[in-house]
Image: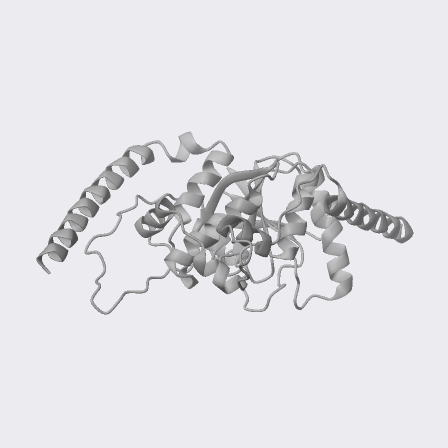
Length: 328
Protein backbone atom coordinates (compact mmCIF):
# COMPACT_ATOMS: atom_id res chain seq x y z
CA UNK A 1 0.00 0.00 0.00
CA UNK A 2 2.80 2.41 1.00
CA UNK A 3 4.77 1.46 -2.14
CA UNK A 4 1.72 2.19 -4.32
CA UNK A 5 1.23 5.59 -2.65
CA UNK A 6 4.92 6.39 -3.16
CA UNK A 7 4.71 5.54 -6.86
CA UNK A 8 1.57 7.65 -7.20
CA UNK A 9 3.34 10.65 -5.59
CA UNK A 10 6.36 10.24 -7.87
CA UNK A 11 4.04 10.11 -10.88
CA UNK A 12 2.31 13.31 -9.76
CA UNK A 13 5.70 15.01 -9.32
CA UNK A 14 6.74 14.02 -12.85
CA UNK A 15 3.46 15.38 -14.26
CA UNK A 16 3.97 18.70 -12.50
CA UNK A 17 7.57 18.98 -13.68
CA UNK A 18 6.52 18.18 -17.25
CA UNK A 19 3.74 20.80 -17.10
CA UNK A 20 6.12 23.53 -15.94
CA UNK A 21 8.76 22.50 -18.48
CA UNK A 22 6.11 22.63 -21.17
CA UNK A 23 4.96 26.03 -19.94
CA UNK A 24 8.51 27.34 -20.17
CA UNK A 25 9.33 26.01 -23.61
CA UNK A 26 6.15 25.49 -25.62
CA UNK A 27 5.33 28.13 -28.21
CA UNK A 28 1.63 27.47 -27.64
CA UNK A 29 1.86 28.93 -24.10
CA UNK A 30 2.28 32.72 -23.82
CA UNK A 31 5.72 33.75 -22.61
CA UNK A 32 5.45 36.67 -20.20
CA UNK A 33 7.94 39.45 -20.88
CA UNK A 34 10.38 40.47 -18.18
CA UNK A 35 9.52 43.66 -16.31
CA UNK A 36 12.56 45.39 -17.81
CA UNK A 37 11.51 44.53 -21.36
CA UNK A 38 7.95 45.63 -20.68
CA UNK A 39 9.19 48.93 -19.24
CA UNK A 40 11.33 49.54 -22.31
CA UNK A 41 8.44 48.74 -24.64
CA UNK A 42 6.00 51.03 -22.83
CA UNK A 43 8.40 53.94 -22.33
CA UNK A 44 9.72 53.67 -25.92
CA UNK A 45 13.34 54.62 -25.43
CA UNK A 46 15.36 56.45 -28.03
CA UNK A 47 18.11 54.56 -29.84
CA UNK A 48 20.97 56.06 -27.80
CA UNK A 49 19.21 56.12 -24.42
CA UNK A 50 20.24 53.80 -21.60
CA UNK A 51 18.23 54.16 -18.39
CA UNK A 52 18.05 52.18 -15.16
CA UNK A 53 14.85 50.40 -14.16
CA UNK A 54 14.13 53.16 -11.63
CA UNK A 55 14.54 55.84 -14.30
CA UNK A 56 12.34 53.90 -16.72
CA UNK A 57 9.63 53.54 -14.08
CA UNK A 58 9.82 57.26 -13.27
CA UNK A 59 9.39 58.13 -16.95
CA UNK A 60 6.37 55.84 -17.33
CA UNK A 61 3.10 57.76 -17.78
CA UNK A 62 0.21 56.54 -15.61
CA UNK A 63 -3.25 56.33 -17.14
CA UNK A 64 -5.27 59.33 -15.77
CA UNK A 65 -8.45 57.23 -15.70
CA UNK A 66 -6.73 54.65 -13.50
CA UNK A 67 -5.47 57.39 -11.17
CA UNK A 68 -8.99 58.85 -10.89
CA UNK A 69 -10.38 55.39 -10.12
CA UNK A 70 -7.76 54.82 -7.40
CA UNK A 71 -8.51 58.26 -5.97
CA UNK A 72 -12.22 57.48 -5.77
CA UNK A 73 -11.67 54.11 -4.06
CA UNK A 74 -8.98 55.54 -1.73
CA UNK A 75 -6.42 53.06 -3.04
CA UNK A 76 -2.72 53.84 -2.82
CA UNK A 77 -1.01 56.22 -0.42
CA UNK A 78 -0.97 59.98 -0.94
CA UNK A 79 1.90 62.47 -0.95
CA UNK A 80 0.43 65.84 -0.12
CA UNK A 81 2.50 68.93 -0.70
CA UNK A 82 2.90 71.67 1.88
CA UNK A 83 -0.04 73.73 0.62
CA UNK A 84 -2.23 70.90 -0.60
CA UNK A 85 -5.20 69.56 1.31
CA UNK A 86 -7.28 66.42 1.10
CA UNK A 87 -10.75 66.49 -0.42
CA UNK A 88 -13.48 67.27 2.10
CA UNK A 89 -15.61 64.45 0.70
CA UNK A 90 -15.19 60.75 -0.01
CA UNK A 91 -16.90 58.15 -2.13
CA UNK A 92 -19.58 56.61 0.10
CA UNK A 93 -19.23 53.14 -1.39
CA UNK A 94 -22.17 50.79 -0.74
CA UNK A 95 -20.91 47.75 1.14
CA UNK A 96 -21.06 44.27 -0.35
CA UNK A 97 -21.28 41.45 2.16
CA UNK A 98 -20.23 37.88 1.54
CA UNK A 99 -21.52 34.91 3.55
CA UNK A 100 -19.52 34.09 6.67
CA UNK A 101 -16.88 31.47 5.97
CA UNK A 102 -15.77 28.49 8.01
CA UNK A 103 -13.05 25.89 7.54
CA UNK A 104 -14.35 22.49 6.54
CA UNK A 105 -11.51 20.49 4.93
CA UNK A 106 -7.75 20.34 4.53
CA UNK A 107 -5.99 18.23 1.92
CA UNK A 108 -2.36 17.13 1.80
CA UNK A 109 -3.10 14.49 -0.86
CA UNK A 110 -5.40 14.21 -3.86
CA UNK A 111 -7.42 11.49 -2.11
CA UNK A 112 -8.25 14.01 0.66
CA UNK A 113 -9.98 16.50 -1.64
CA UNK A 114 -13.63 16.95 -0.59
CA UNK A 115 -16.33 15.90 -3.03
CA UNK A 116 -17.06 18.35 -5.82
CA UNK A 117 -20.28 20.20 -5.08
CA UNK A 118 -20.28 24.02 -4.92
CA UNK A 119 -18.45 26.51 -7.17
CA UNK A 120 -14.85 27.01 -6.01
CA UNK A 121 -12.42 29.93 -6.23
CA UNK A 122 -8.76 29.24 -5.53
CA UNK A 123 -6.44 31.79 -3.90
CA UNK A 124 -2.72 31.52 -4.60
CA UNK A 125 0.42 33.65 -4.64
CA UNK A 126 3.93 34.02 -3.32
CA UNK A 127 4.48 33.38 0.38
CA UNK A 128 3.56 36.36 2.57
CA UNK A 129 1.51 38.05 -0.17
CA UNK A 130 -1.50 38.09 2.17
CA UNK A 131 -3.71 35.16 1.05
CA UNK A 132 -5.09 34.21 4.48
CA UNK A 133 -5.56 37.84 5.53
CA UNK A 134 -7.49 38.54 2.34
CA UNK A 135 -9.80 35.54 2.85
CA UNK A 136 -10.60 36.70 6.39
CA UNK A 137 -11.21 40.31 5.35
CA UNK A 138 -13.36 39.35 2.38
CA UNK A 139 -15.79 37.39 4.52
CA UNK A 140 -15.45 39.18 7.87
CA UNK A 141 -14.00 36.10 9.51
CA UNK A 142 -10.92 34.80 11.30
CA UNK A 143 -11.20 31.26 9.95
CA UNK A 144 -7.97 31.44 7.91
CA UNK A 145 -4.88 31.27 10.09
CA UNK A 146 -2.58 34.27 9.63
CA UNK A 147 1.14 34.43 10.44
CA UNK A 148 4.07 36.79 9.85
CA UNK A 149 6.14 33.74 8.89
CA UNK A 150 5.89 32.96 5.14
CA UNK A 151 4.95 29.45 4.07
CA UNK A 152 2.55 28.72 6.94
CA UNK A 153 -0.13 27.20 4.67
CA UNK A 154 1.14 23.69 3.95
CA UNK A 155 -1.98 22.10 2.48
CA UNK A 156 -5.04 23.03 0.45
CA UNK A 157 -7.49 24.58 2.91
CA UNK A 158 -11.15 24.53 1.88
CA UNK A 159 -13.52 27.13 3.34
CA UNK A 160 -17.27 27.11 2.82
CA UNK A 161 -19.23 30.35 2.49
CA UNK A 162 -22.66 29.50 3.88
CA UNK A 163 -22.95 26.57 1.46
CA UNK A 164 -22.99 28.98 -1.50
CA UNK A 165 -19.40 28.58 -2.69
CA UNK A 166 -15.96 27.46 -1.54
CA UNK A 167 -12.73 29.42 -1.18
CA UNK A 168 -9.55 27.35 -1.45
CA UNK A 169 -6.36 28.66 0.15
CA UNK A 170 -3.36 27.09 -1.61
CA UNK A 171 0.22 26.87 -0.31
CA UNK A 172 2.33 29.85 -1.32
CA UNK A 173 5.06 29.40 -3.88
CA UNK A 174 8.51 30.86 -3.28
CA UNK A 175 8.38 29.23 0.14
CA UNK A 176 10.97 30.90 2.34
CA UNK A 177 10.74 28.55 5.34
CA UNK A 178 9.39 25.32 3.91
CA UNK A 179 11.53 22.19 3.67
CA UNK A 180 12.54 21.05 0.20
CA UNK A 181 10.61 17.76 0.53
CA UNK A 182 7.43 19.68 1.37
CA UNK A 183 7.89 21.97 -1.63
CA UNK A 184 8.24 18.97 -3.97
CA UNK A 185 5.01 17.57 -2.52
CA UNK A 186 2.94 20.78 -2.76
CA UNK A 187 3.58 21.41 -6.45
CA UNK A 188 1.99 18.17 -7.76
CA UNK A 189 -0.82 18.60 -5.21
CA UNK A 190 -1.69 22.07 -6.52
CA UNK A 191 -1.21 20.98 -10.14
CA UNK A 192 -3.56 18.02 -9.65
CA UNK A 193 -6.19 20.24 -8.05
CA UNK A 194 -6.00 22.81 -10.87
CA UNK A 195 -6.03 20.20 -13.62
CA UNK A 196 -8.73 17.86 -12.28
CA UNK A 197 -11.17 20.00 -10.26
CA UNK A 198 -14.34 20.45 -12.32
CA UNK A 199 -15.99 22.85 -9.85
CA UNK A 200 -13.04 25.30 -9.96
CA UNK A 201 -14.40 28.51 -11.52
CA UNK A 202 -11.35 30.72 -11.18
CA UNK A 203 -7.95 31.12 -9.51
CA UNK A 204 -7.06 34.46 -7.94
CA UNK A 205 -3.30 35.05 -8.37
CA UNK A 206 -2.23 37.52 -5.69
CA UNK A 207 0.69 39.85 -6.41
CA UNK A 208 2.38 42.29 -4.05
CA UNK A 209 1.69 45.74 -5.56
CA UNK A 210 5.19 46.89 -4.56
CA UNK A 211 6.86 44.29 -6.80
CA UNK A 212 4.42 43.31 -9.55
CA UNK A 213 5.00 40.06 -11.45
CA UNK A 214 8.09 38.09 -10.40
CA UNK A 215 9.68 34.96 -11.85
CA UNK A 216 7.69 32.54 -9.63
CA UNK A 217 4.46 34.30 -10.60
CA UNK A 218 5.25 33.96 -14.31
CA UNK A 219 5.93 30.24 -13.95
CA UNK A 220 2.67 29.67 -12.10
CA UNK A 221 0.67 31.77 -14.57
CA UNK A 222 2.21 29.78 -17.41
CA UNK A 223 1.10 26.59 -15.65
CA UNK A 224 -2.46 27.96 -15.40
CA UNK A 225 -2.43 28.77 -19.11
CA UNK A 226 -1.04 25.33 -19.88
CA UNK A 227 -3.90 23.67 -17.96
CA UNK A 228 -6.53 26.03 -19.48
CA UNK A 229 -7.50 27.38 -16.05
CA UNK A 230 -9.23 30.77 -15.80
CA UNK A 231 -7.37 33.11 -13.46
CA UNK A 232 -7.37 36.74 -12.41
CA UNK A 233 -4.65 39.03 -11.07
CA UNK A 234 -5.17 40.72 -7.69
CA UNK A 235 -2.71 43.38 -6.52
CA UNK A 236 -2.48 43.34 -2.71
CA UNK A 237 -0.92 45.73 -0.15
CA UNK A 238 -1.88 48.73 -2.28
CA UNK A 239 -1.79 50.98 0.79
CA UNK A 240 2.03 50.64 0.75
CA UNK A 241 2.40 52.12 -2.75
CA UNK A 242 1.99 55.75 -3.80
CA UNK A 243 -1.15 56.26 -5.88
CA UNK A 244 0.69 57.32 -9.06
CA UNK A 245 3.16 54.43 -8.74
CA UNK A 246 0.25 52.04 -8.20
CA UNK A 247 -1.35 53.25 -11.45
CA UNK A 248 1.97 52.64 -13.21
CA UNK A 249 2.23 49.15 -11.71
CA UNK A 250 -1.31 48.43 -12.90
CA UNK A 251 -0.30 49.49 -16.42
CA UNK A 252 2.80 47.26 -16.45
CA UNK A 253 0.96 44.20 -15.14
CA UNK A 254 -1.80 44.78 -17.71
CA UNK A 255 0.80 44.91 -20.48
CA UNK A 256 2.43 41.67 -19.33
CA UNK A 257 -0.78 39.60 -19.11
CA UNK A 258 -2.49 41.15 -22.13
CA UNK A 259 -1.73 38.19 -24.40
CA UNK A 260 -2.36 35.46 -21.82
CA UNK A 261 -5.02 33.04 -22.99
CA UNK A 262 -6.81 32.39 -19.72
CA UNK A 263 -6.18 35.54 -17.69
CA UNK A 264 -9.30 37.64 -16.98
CA UNK A 265 -8.31 41.10 -18.31
CA UNK A 266 -9.69 43.03 -15.32
CA UNK A 267 -6.94 43.46 -12.70
CA UNK A 268 -8.20 43.91 -9.15
CA UNK A 269 -6.44 46.20 -6.65
CA UNK A 270 -7.04 46.29 -2.91
CA UNK A 271 -5.74 46.88 0.59
CA UNK A 272 -6.92 44.23 3.05
CA UNK A 273 -5.51 46.38 5.86
CA UNK A 274 -7.72 49.40 5.07
CA UNK A 275 -10.54 47.56 3.31
CA UNK A 276 -10.16 49.60 0.11
CA UNK A 277 -11.04 47.67 -3.04
CA UNK A 278 -12.56 44.72 -1.15
CA UNK A 279 -16.10 45.47 -2.34
CA UNK A 280 -14.94 45.29 -5.96
CA UNK A 281 -13.44 41.85 -5.37
CA UNK A 282 -16.53 40.67 -3.48
CA UNK A 283 -18.71 41.58 -6.46
CA UNK A 284 -16.31 39.76 -8.79
CA UNK A 285 -16.47 36.62 -6.64
CA UNK A 286 -20.27 36.64 -6.51
CA UNK A 287 -20.59 37.04 -10.27
CA UNK A 288 -17.96 34.32 -10.82
CA UNK A 289 -20.00 31.89 -8.71
CA UNK A 290 -23.31 32.95 -10.36
CA UNK A 291 -24.56 34.50 -7.10
CA UNK A 292 -24.94 38.09 -8.27
CA UNK A 293 -28.73 37.99 -8.35
CA UNK A 294 -28.91 36.54 -4.83
CA UNK A 295 -26.58 39.02 -3.12
CA UNK A 296 -26.50 42.11 -5.37
CA UNK A 297 -30.19 42.70 -6.02
CA UNK A 298 -30.29 46.43 -5.14
CA UNK A 299 -26.55 47.07 -5.04
CA UNK A 300 -26.21 48.36 -8.61
CA UNK A 301 -28.78 51.11 -8.01
CA UNK A 302 -27.14 52.13 -4.71
CA UNK A 303 -23.74 52.19 -6.40
CA UNK A 304 -25.02 54.41 -9.25
CA UNK A 305 -26.47 56.92 -6.74
CA UNK A 306 -23.26 56.96 -4.66
CA UNK A 307 -21.07 57.50 -7.73
CA UNK A 308 -23.34 60.29 -9.01
CA UNK A 309 -23.05 62.11 -5.67
CA UNK A 310 -19.27 61.61 -5.65
CA UNK A 311 -18.77 63.05 -9.14
CA UNK A 312 -20.98 66.04 -8.32
CA UNK A 313 -18.82 66.79 -5.28
CA UNK A 314 -15.69 66.25 -7.35
CA UNK A 315 -16.84 68.81 -9.93
CA UNK A 316 -17.52 71.39 -7.18
CA UNK A 317 -14.10 70.66 -5.66
CA UNK A 318 -12.29 71.11 -8.99
CA UNK A 319 -14.21 74.29 -9.85
CA UNK A 320 -13.37 75.74 -6.42
CA UNK A 321 -9.69 74.83 -6.84
CA UNK A 322 -9.57 76.50 -10.28
CA UNK A 323 -11.23 79.66 -8.98
CA UNK A 324 -8.79 79.84 -6.08
CA UNK A 325 -5.84 79.36 -8.43
CA UNK A 326 -7.07 82.22 -10.70
CA UNK A 327 -7.35 84.58 -7.70
CA UNK A 328 -3.78 83.78 -6.75
